[in-house]
Image (cartoon, rainbow, N blue to C red; front, side, top):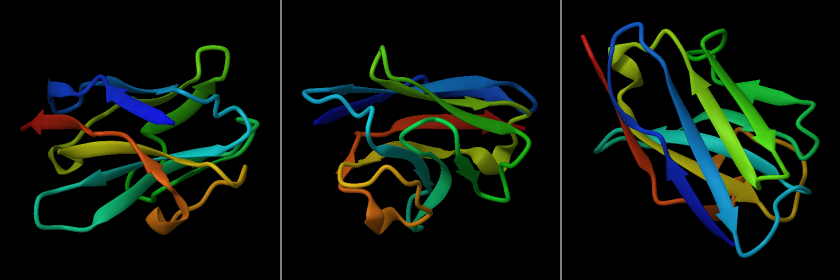
Length: 124
């Protein structure tokens, strides 16, 4: 499976962006998908995850109430709607899929396939 993350860019504090993660090569409708982010020199941190049904999602405390993860299995795409963006949200955002589980997970090691990342820059 190949994952293509897109939608990153430069936005001012308080602005919004919507990231997309499109899968090809295999449908991921039965699997959980997550978003992580990474600053150079730092670990890749959990942002959000959604289970196979789209009925359950989990968020990092730092983004709760501002970010929303959703999925459109007809388009084989998962989205991350990011509102009220802050400078500390600046990072490269990666999507990942758990090909052997439909349950969401907070840990990066639960995900076997990763997209290439999309850069989000929030200016103050």
